[in-house]
Image (cartoon, rainbow, N blue to C red; front, side):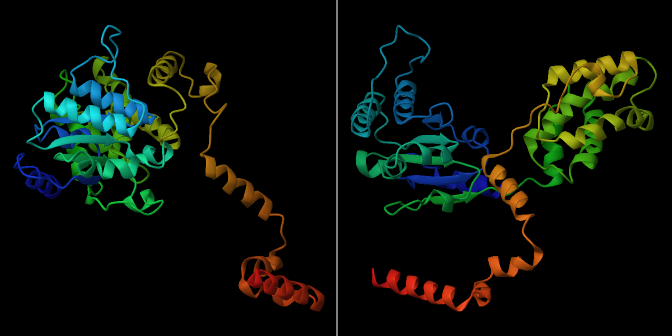
Length: 338
């Protein structure tokens, strides 16, 4: 709430100039619903080129539907055309005297588009001579954006991770209408006691809670237990939660496939997923740099243990012969001369 109060103070008076660039490390939708101010939200994953970003902003300003082919699309190929069309659109909307917000969600994608795109957005108020505030939403630190000089430093607002009580409070809002809220809250507490040590991502925890809740309620729907029989409900869900604990974040099967698996297990009593004809570990893609790390660790495992000091310390040249030392010294002197 402290961070949201800071935002509210910055944008309380929409007629006064606002800090023209703000950098957030938090979810996007939570902030925008608080301040009912003129803004455009751009997802930089969906709009993955400069032209798509420009045209998306202009579409929203002109209240056009991007999927409607009858609307004449505002063609915009470069930043110069975008600045001209943006000033024209804001003037037509009579928004030149108040702060207009352009929110770039997944802003880390801007680093992979054009080299001058992010610096231009950071200087957009200066280039347009209008009261425009750029908000960058990202889950990485600002230092990873600074790839060169000429960057304006934004006003950074960091949102810390949710505490356990806050996660529980948010997850409780997903309670189905057919069950009491306190019952679903007790289920979420049970789920977090299993997964909290390995997963603290809100989206993943909410996904797991909704995915396993029907299985948790099976004894109730079959008439074998009541809402207050927590011990019997726990015994029913415990093996499924322990199995899901090994596949957190992987999403090896979809929610529908997982429900089908649980349904077939209930009918056949078979706990082996492979017997159901579903190979959940047939393919798992590793991150790009994790592949290099895995390969380097494999290759390094063939090096003798006594060579680690030679390879990974600055004093590794002690074991070189006199001829090798002379060659290395000559190479170093040649490098310094050039």
